[in-house]
Length: 490
Image (cartoon, rainbow, N blue to C red; front, side, top):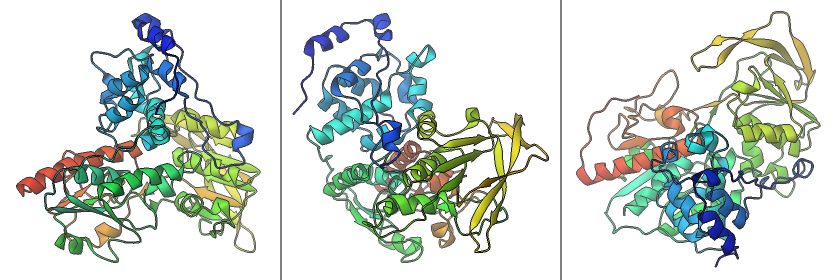
């Protein structure tokens, strides 16, 4: 089934040559108005309509050397799928994408395309790149709504069994590729729902949970088993897992929240972003009392940080009814690691940005609940190791912000449980990551591979997926040869 399209317009667009194609404006994706979305958790962008998707796809120049593919960690044939969209062949588009990416509806929504594939688009040199992410989302949504969702073929059984620890983007990707190769695959998930950070970390208004569940359902139809509430390191050690699996992939993510070791961090009302978002997203506290997980309702909330997680927290707080939401960041907007789109949405929704500020302590009332954030002003000095200008304290510039909640969103470290309970698994003592060869994703322990945040620290969904794919290739090789080479680990 397909939607009606203007075939004459498609033929006209297809006949355009390079310069004429470059004159086609980037298509606008409609979205909820700020005043509407402030009070609901529904997805903000509506997605491209079919004809807008066709027009946007015809902006692609179909380069002979498509550098956009180089910017994609999972190597999607980007010109190939866009060519199908440009011709109105949406079935062909989604089949092309799924040759290398089984989670396109997720990637099209949350991946930072502007820093990856779209950054490498030729059109970006002189103007707006092709909206690769939005076209990927369109193709995936079209398949789910109008197309035929195909279950990927599985090779003949190999007799090998692989355990995957964690059902985040790295684990899901590795599991799919391994199952396609004919291995039996079991995922061990510590929580009661699949998806890892996709489920507990990213709000409904950015990534509806129904989409994650739909992708997982396809995996289960492939024959992948998922064990929930199964905490490796407590219920069973990694060594015990290896006794009944031929190989194991670790994709346990970055579940250890970071704090700043400031006075008052133990006051009631001071959350980590992990706890705050998990309560709201995974346990659906926003729908209380229909869902039975409560969360404190804040009037004035301070969110510390400048990444996507900080934006997710701030925008969530707006929807939970906070009257004032302050986002405190020690650099300027130029240095913020958050996606431009997320910053834009946060501003539209009323988040108050306190740039070049940093908290120095939290002050509570007589009941032990946070009431003030004391901040200090900053100015930018010389660049640091990250390449960004280093924030420097402005002496004597302290001031107070009246709050009733603080959420610290400055990053997370790898979950330490599995490394702590596994002798022989080498760990970077400074960062807590499992030492991994980034070419093969092998660790120091025979039969154990790792990828995603557990290997490199908190990163992006698509990078974790790329690790999952690379690990699956290496696991296939190991299972077919039985050879485990000693490698340099990072």
